Amino acid sequence: DQQVKQNSPSLSVQEGRISILNCDYTNSMFDYFLWYKKYPAEGPTFLISISSIKDKNEDGRFTVFLNKSAKHLSLHIVPSQPGDSAVYFCAASSGNTGKLIFGQGTTLQVKP
Amino acid sequence: GAVVSQHPSWVICKSGTSVKIECRSLDFQATTMFWYRQFPKQSLMLMATSNEGSKATYEQGVEKDKFLINHASLTLSTLTVTSAHPEDSSFYICSARDGRWADEQFFGPGTRLTVL
Image 1 (tube, helix red, strand yellow):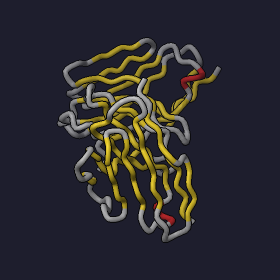
Image 2 (cartoon, chains in turn blue, brown; image 1 turned 90 degrees about the horizontal axis):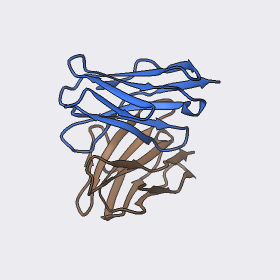
Image 3 (cartoon, chains in turn yellow, blue; image 1 turned 30 degrees about the vertical axis):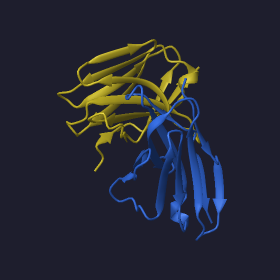
Image 4 (spheres, chains in turn yellow, blue; image 1 turned 135 degrees about the horizontal axis):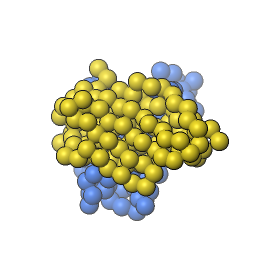
């Protein structure tokens, strides 16, 4: 039972363009969502998060959008840079437990 | 920023032996630590939640007698894989939550376990 899904295993974008990574969830009890960036053989690095009471959160080049009715969130990176190339995971939690449920990840490649 | 370390970063062991992995929060006190495992090209799967001074809470399907978790202090949690088998080979990652900011969770660099 995959409660958090990232249906696109990979995404390729040209440098300077926008990268949009998508994530869907099924559990309506989730109230906090996070995006992490991960390189092989390393732990995830926190990028940005959003509470369920908001529909948008922005931090520099990264913006996360949350559509609660559709149970969908997305991460926008603009402009994309080659250094953004990595695996991106979305994660969700509920009730301030700290327990994170991760999606499968999307590998982003930003081409120079 | 908060730093979480793991030791060892990689380990190779023979089938049937036990392996201990340490997770330390270096510059903050972690009231809660989490253990995840990741198989190649798959998601991170939560194994258990570890609270300082109490028993760990395991996720469904995770054998608590096989994956022993000890959270003896606010800066250290250990995961012991007992009687390891090749199917236990995986990437184990811990995370630590700072008690001051409940929403913040910091991940360690992970430990690659290979069981021969």
